[in-house]
Image (cartoon, rainbow, N blue to C red; front, side, top):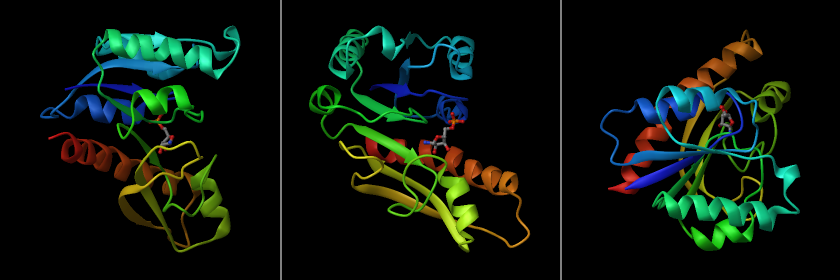
Length: 183
Ligand code: GRF
């Protein structure tokens, strides 16, 4: 089974997935919409092919997603794992990969969707937040939930401590959920 990771940032989840030795699928492509993103260097280091593009060089989402689908087909990709890809997925990709696109989000959805979910939870002073893995639909962090894990927020936590605690859970949970979906 071949999968693509879509990421726009640091790529710590990308790396956690790649590092999972017994994963039942091969990460055969990185799709990235930010030419300066650190995740690209990570992909190069692991010899994962990349498709890097700049959305503003295309007329619209239809045109860049059409290009993405071409690359995915060329690499025989059957699953898509979003890991910090900061864009809504449009109908072109959703139709081509129906039921095969999943996302990780750092909150207990439906709480704190969208940007800076960890900061949102921290500032809301809730006692717990967490990590959600869900199927992707046209909405922002709205598709059917596959797995969730709670992460406590302690009164003395700095934002950075909370971020680290959440990322640790992400890096364990995402490969685990991928494994269970794929086999
Ligand atoms: C993660 O917190 C993920 O849940 C969110 O974006 C972040 C990506 O981080 N969707 P990284 O690039 O994997 O380090």
